[in-house]
Length: 201
Ligand code: ADP
Ligand code: 5GP
Image (tube, rainbow, N blue to C red):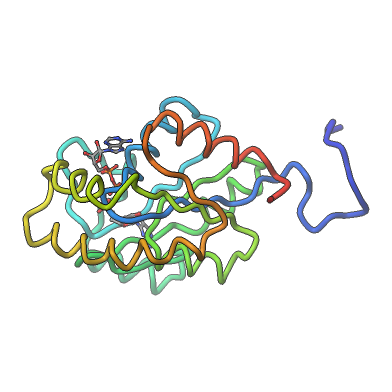
């Protein structure tokens, strides 16, 4: 028998079943850096691997950071209802494979999605119990520095992502929590603490 403490009769969500957590925030704020740190230091958190039509950056591997697919394959994922949500971002499409997320939640594992703002809104609609966490930069200047300093995008793509970032920063108030990414270690610790706290507040 489980040693879980029951606080009431047949709760809709058992106390020990973690909520889905969504990490979002402007491009360049450090989402994938935080997620990579979580993968290394907190393997108990299950990280959803998205499908994308974007080309891999140096060091990115199929099935680890993303499932890299072409447009035709992405169309099929949509048509077959295999995506929990998907969005177009800066000229590429990104989507969350549905079944893996549901399976890991059902198994009682804390599940983390790192997705863009449009995706976060779609998850909120389809899974209102999900916890939305906004990763904020310490300042706008620091965000520009990070996005430019990453050196993986052309000037045109950086411009497009900065334009999106301006809109995304304004959406912070729609989120349940904000974490400021000054230190990757601190943010990862705070994120884990949020994820392991099932009370929801
Ligand atoms: P995102 O996934 O949100 O687009 P990245 O994780 O690719 O952002 O980070 C963008 C850049 O900022 C990278 O060069 C990364 O090394 C750097 N970075 C991320 N977090 C921090 C931090 N806390 N302090 C300084 N630089 C950071
Ligand atoms: P990048 O190209 O920098 O890896 O990601 C670009 C944006 O796409 C980021 O804001 C990232 O959070 C978002 N993203 C990654 N995977 C998904 C996904 O499955 N769905 C949605 N909606 N956005 C995603």
